[in-house]
Amino acid sequence: MIYCRTCRTVWPTGTVYCGKCQGSLGVRICPSGHSNPRFVTACLTCGKPELSKYAPCLRIGCLSQVLAWLVALTLIRFGIAHVGSLLLLVWGMFEHLFAFLFQAQFRDVVRNAMGFFVEAAVILGFLHLALGERARPLFTLYRFVDRSVRLCLRWFVVAVKALVRRV
Ligand SMILES: [Zn+2]
Ligand SMILES: [Zn+2]
Image (cartoon, rainbow, N blue to C red; front, side, top):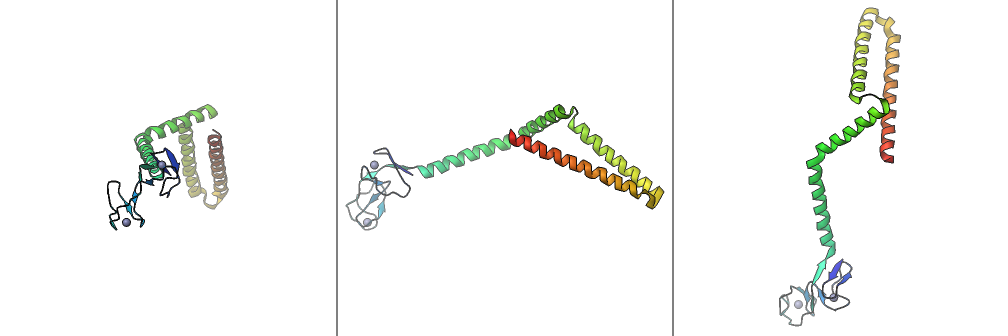
């Protein structure tokens, strides 16, 4: 968009002459169509002295792009400066939500679950050494529990995502 400052009118991008004051927007144009800067008395290309009336203008498309860049850069700078605290905030909210929903600290639950699985794996390993092939059903059971827990976790993540999306 081009804004003619003489008659305060907006024209589409690419407009050469103002449709209201008949000035050429941002340039002075000679009869052969050459564009010239504002402060010339003859065309810089062909020397003809008959130049169009100059209309001061603002190219708003350009301006809005610069503004958009400035806003984006500011946001990025703000984001980089505060990414740590933002993440901490989100994490804190998640922990609060988890504690509220399950009456337990998330990190305790994860620690307990991981501890349980590591212990179970170690015990199963010993059993396997001791019993050999006869321990196979235990492994099947372990795998079943492991798969169920994973499924529960996946469902939990899906539920949290759905909650977040609704908010
Ligand atoms: Zn105008
Ligand atoms: Zn010319």
